[in-house]
Image (tube, rainbow, N blue to C red; front, top):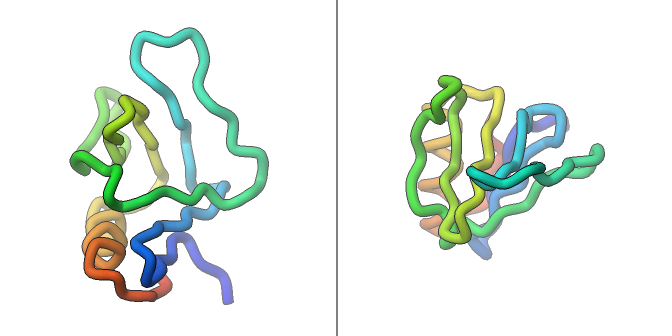
Length: 92
């Protein structure tokens, strides 16, 4: 089944690579590259969810990285809440 995001009982969020706009650290020269593989992040490392200065839905991470995505805010919020609760689910 196709998915955009899915959560695991371990508190991880898997984001399909084609929906990731960029993974970057502000004030750095380059961002990280996502090369066709799902991006897996730990929900415990997400500091907050909001919009970046370009208006994209973004997870702001404890290590300073910003993960911007082409999804609705509600989908990102649902995935974050499910992962924090330790529930497995495919979001959209």
